Image: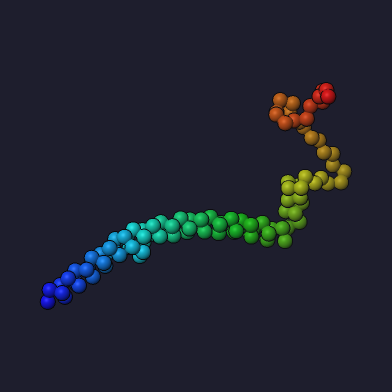
Length: 102
């Protein structure tokens, strides 16, 4: 009877150790829950970004004005007959200077 009590006590301690410290423990589950929540937030942000991209693609497929707008904004294209003016701020760092002596 004494041996049975010792075996049960060791088994109880082993299970308690696993419950509090080991893999699958309460702390481990809490950490996994926080990682899951963080991943769900990231996934939601990516879903929203994908939805915006999908609307842009659909707009580009159906609307010629959207294609022109995209070409003007991203590629710097101009229409035939338009005049392009580039305005440079002299005070801004990195701007091209006319009186650079070399």
